[in-house]
Image 1 (tube, rainbow, N blue to C red):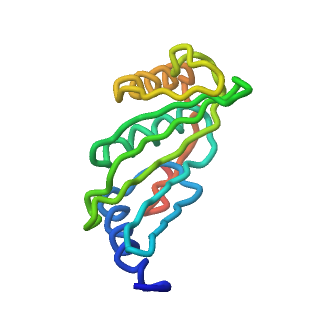
Image 2 (tube, rainbow, N blue to C red):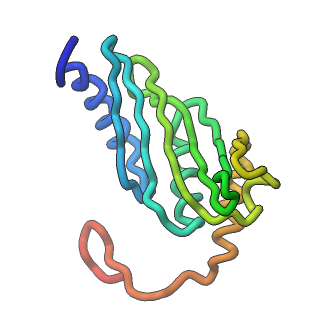
Length: 156
């Protein structure tokens, strides 16, 4: 299969996955790659945001992927951290690998357990959940104000 046709099955599966698991995560880009043999891979970039939003998006994606793993790596300068959730999309015929990338977020030792500059580490799902909880507590109370319902436009 050559040209744009080799992407059609993967695009349909990506559409099915996003429709089946609509995320509230702030996305900035989705990259779909298909090699000449037709094997696809997907990279999702979360929008740069405050740590609580990044953590929530990563937790949400971890729950929607098959066989998820969480990875963190500290920049060589040591002042920022990147986090990734990797797993597989079960909606794809060939069990497509998916990586969801977030960061940079400030390095503050809440998530990485003393990770050295330039180093990477696999984290448990519980560590990611605890980071989300710590960020929510750290940023509470959230700013209040009227919000609009996405579907009706009514002010809540």
